[in-house]
Amino acid sequence: MTAAPRAVEPGRFRHALGQFATGVTVITTTTATGPVGCTVSAFCSLSLDPPLVLACLGRDRSMHRALMSAPGFGVSILASDQGPLARDFARPADRFAGVAHSPGRYGPHLDGALAHLDCAVHEIREGGDHVIVLGLLDAVAVHVGEPLLYAQGAFLDLPGPDWERAAASAPQEWLLSAPW
Image (cartoon, one colour):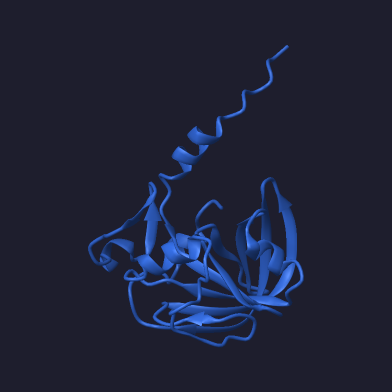
């Protein structure tokens, strides 16, 4: 008889996953009382056909409550100089006060971001103390700049990309051949 696996302590789990660098986004939507938004680093592409993205939101976040009845959401993929904006959208406050933004289909687009996505809510699934929001992409705009990266509880200040090192024999071959 084998023993049941031990649960990993939340602090240890958080520390281990903090070793994985991620991009940083702000997810937004518009409610009857105005725009809402929050910083999200648990964000990724899910499917090319149909074009789907995935975002994970804490159940205790106001954004979770807003998305439960919203038709969609906006995503601003933050640029390397937008660390203060990411911190502001992670704190409870009037997050849009003094923040330059323009209207998106479902929520505001933050000025200066590297990309803006408009997504219809495709599905919301359970995920422990979070929900997993799947968004069906309606529109996208891409801008010039470097991404804001986050790991080990801090924003990363890295040298420019080494495109030669990342090159593959075919576009995106290294990504498409990954085991995930």
